[in-house]
Length: 202
Image (cartoon, rainbow, N blue to C red; front, side, top):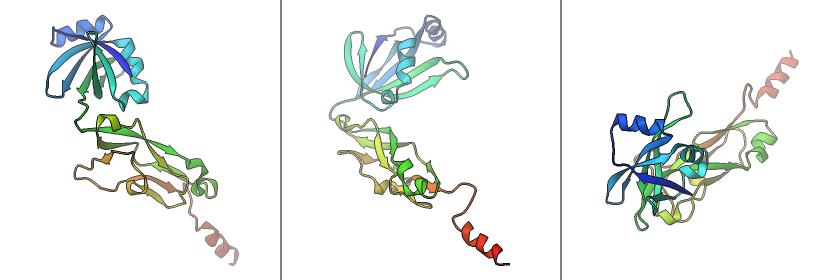
């Protein structure tokens, strides 16, 4: 995805407020062994871009002063109650350097699983994104999780899915095999039938 940025020479809180009043957003781009650069963005353009999931998990083409740079979105600061973007951070991406970032999980076939179709269970998504490491060219926009075989009481762990080529899970000392989804009954138990039969025999 492509977006436009302009170099920003004036910094500070008062300068940022002036930018925002003019419909601009202060931002910064850093990384790839280069000096951090203060930039500004068009608010409407970046606001609508941030509404697209792929903008959060793709290599972006930032046109800075007419020159292209590959970057990743790193953080966004929103106004606490208004639909306004206050500040954005981007990280430069070098083609041959490993990067670590979060990628959304795409859950499929849940409604077709035995847990839902036969037992009327609810499948809960324990994680919605996964932190991964890969080269820029291998970065996926999402990682697919197939829920089609789930039954009541079962769970899907990371080791049960196949990560895209060139992608590894960045555990960072945490759980090396986290739970991604679980299937549970809501407001009942699958042993209720046995309880009913016992009451009928009294």
